[in-house]
Figure 1: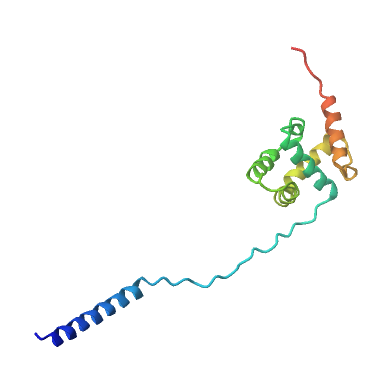
Figure 2 (figure 1 turned 120 degrees about the horizontal axis):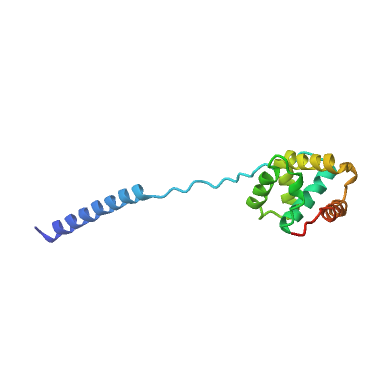
Length: 150
């Protein structure tokens, strides 16, 4: 073979190698999809009575203080188990968010406790519109528990 033929053969080999390389690159080519933004719809919270909102805030505060012993006297249907489980699972929420979400998903549980408080202690829930109202009731209830000296 002449040198010219060798050069032609080398050129042909290079062209074949380039074609093979291009085919491999096409096979391995990564195609990135276009980014699209999806936003979650804003949560719509149902309106709750003021006393239930304040009670929920009070309940969460007592939960955080690990001071729900008195509240347990008013739990007739394991409502506290459901509420406390939810609070533990969502403890990362800020106080206001936690209150809103707890009310959204456990308003009936909280209302059941309030109803039992109304039934046992004869309070007017609609008049309990501040944290201090609930806290004073709680401390008075604590003071009225008879203690035993064993």
